[in-house]
Image (cartoon, rainbow, N blue to C red; front, side, top):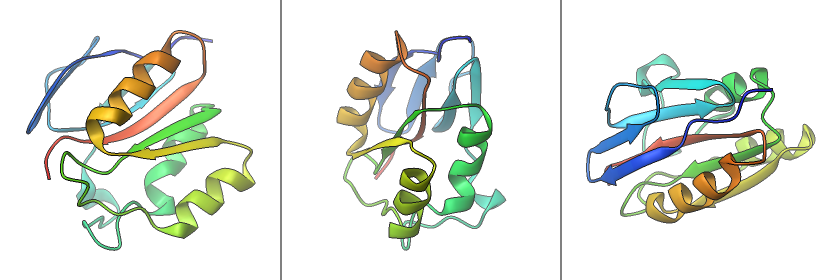
Length: 121
């Protein structure tokens, strides 16, 4: 299986990821990733990351998923999202974005890791 792309830069409102154009929010998974468009599932800061937001990560074979809460931890994560991932046997990390990037990059070298990253608030 292909590895997950590393995050090379994070600042408020900007992320740079191996092989992808710079952007604000990302869905990353083994073999690639793309910008995360909250409008696809109607995601808002509250109630936060929904089960529908992580389905693509499961479809890409992630065994570990990192969910970032934003630089100021304003993005919530629905309990149903964590429950869904746990029911699929996926290890879940929910962290402020700076810490989430550290965890993700550490795991990207050897795990089938995916993540949702929000680079603002």
